[in-house]
Length: 121
Image (tube, rainbow, N blue to C red; front, side):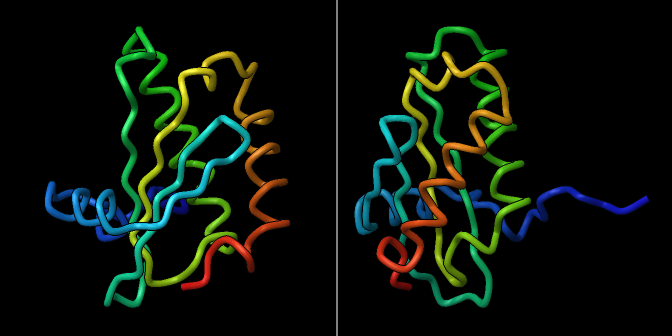
């Protein structure tokens, strides 16, 4: 069986890494659904971090959104730049989306048309 998980090396785990991206990174809003903050790194691969606000009341919903973002990133790495640290911050209205398909369709639509303009790294 093929392992389809997101490797630990591709995740932001340290607080200083998150702070570095949050304070020094470039910000992109995607259709009032998601804020993406990115910053080039010195590694040969990208790393992601996810911050979900408690404005999304239920932990079940917060965890579902984190799973959606990880899955979208894992399946669509080609839409993101190499050698960047990326932090995803979903807007609370993401909860109103019906399912993962709708979520991924909206993100893929935006990122595929804006990749060259949005991610210069």
